[in-house]
Length: 254
Image (cartoon, rainbow, N blue to C red; front, side, top):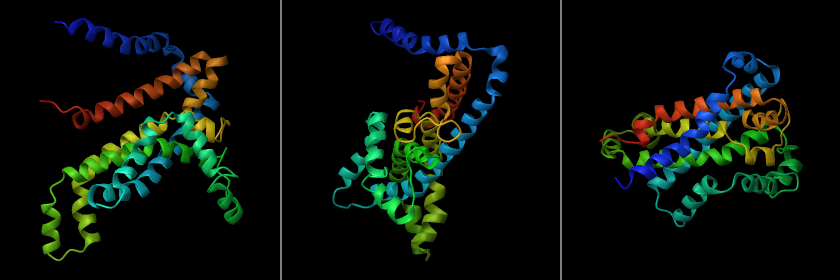
């Protein structure tokens, strides 16, 4: 009983802001608000950037998760710490770091500009890069956990039957870690969809180019509260759907 009152206060503290959002939502005009041209552009851009961030995360994050789970190399703990750092790093700091790394005068950005004429800041590609930077750790740690938890005897059996490493990975390992990989991709996508700080710092807030839904919410708060609430509801529904879908993976039942 000593925990009842603090627990109720905690639930209320977390629930009241959401109830306030739902109470103030323009339900009668919700479809009209979401149909506004600037809102539709922000929705489309958010989907493009978040899916692009997931693609980058899968392409380079899964191999890194495999290395962290299976290969005992020097500095592995340091690499794991660096991998998870964006999860606790303030997003604005991440945006500043991206500018110093991939800006036109940045560590890698100046080389990209000179060699290929590629400029990332304040572009859609820059928004994708910023979202991938903050969202990729969710995919990596979830996939690594799946690799560590899987029964490796299936891989050993495939090897004894003559399967090569790539065939074993493609036909045995990937299907076994598919639930973890799917969960990590879903979390990665939801985090990328809601990214704000690193995106506005590195890519700016340019309508039609880098203005994703969170940035549109921030801008709409100044002159169109109903549009801001409508976009917030979309993000809330997406986040809630992801958590419900992954409930059994993140909150195991007895």
